[in-house]
Image (cartoon, rainbow, N blue to C red):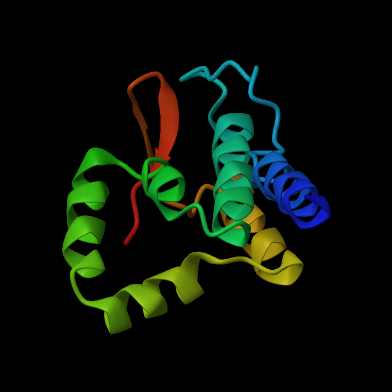
Length: 119
C-alpha cells in the first residue's frame, strides 16, 4: 500500500511539473510594434526549445517555414541539427535579439503575431 501511495504521488509530481511557457501569455501582438513582438516571439521560442516542446516552437515560424520544418522532421538526424541551431543559450539569444533590433532578422506578421521566417 505504501508503495502505491508513493507511486501515485510521484505520478502527480511528474505531471504537475510539465514544462510550461514561462513568457507572458497575455502579450498582445501588434503589426506596428515589430521589434517588441519579434523579441517576444524569440523569448517564446527559447522557452519552448529549452523545454523540448518542438511542436509549439515550430508554430512560431511562418506557415511557409513550418512546411519546410515538417520536411526536416522526417529525417531524425537533420532535425537534431535544426533543433541545435534554434536552441539558444543566453549569448546566442542576445545575438539574435541584436539582429531583431537592427532589423536584420526575418519575420512576418501572420495570424495576428510575429512569426520567424527563417529556416
